[in-house]
Amino acid sequence: MLKRETYLSRIRGFYDSDLVKILVGIRKFGKSVILNQIVEEIKDKGVLENHIIYVNFELVEFEELQDYKKLNKYIKDNIKDDKIYYIFLDEIQKVEKFEIVVNSLRASLSNVSIFITGSNSKLLPDKLSTVLSGRYVLFNI
View 1 (tube, rainbow, N blue to C red):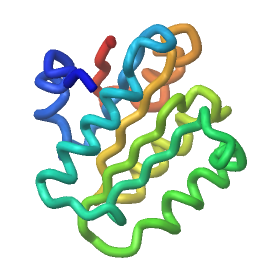
View 2 (cartoon, rainbow, N blue to C red):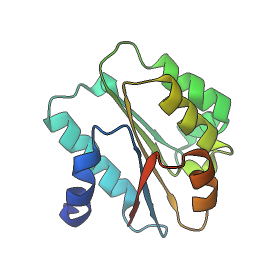
View 3 (cartoon, one colour):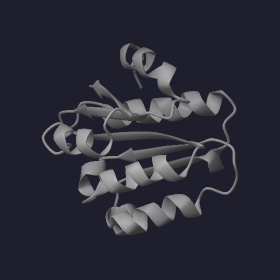
View 4 (tube, one colour):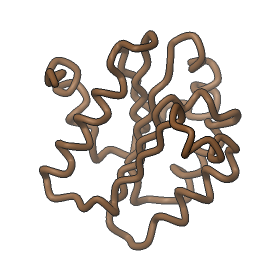
């Protein structure tokens, strides 16, 4: 797999930031590949698998988590200690009211680093800027 260094080099400085990292772009343009490469880099730094929460909403096994309250509970139930947890929410636009979950996680937990992806047409910046104003960094892929 081709390493997407151009994008990774821009995102890398935010891995441990409390800002929500948002990767947007057209469908099938490599957002998920970049997320997986970030996961690999984080593991290479010594982060344990149980401190990485990865939900891909295109997979049927995560379909139940498209309910925003269930998603919130799932994530909080998987956080067991005070060490940093890396949360990856791929194709988040499939979750109605996802921005409430993201904002709630940011507000209630100090030990999370959140990454989300979505398609330009579905991940409305207006919706994000209202709920997360000043609390995110956007990367166009």
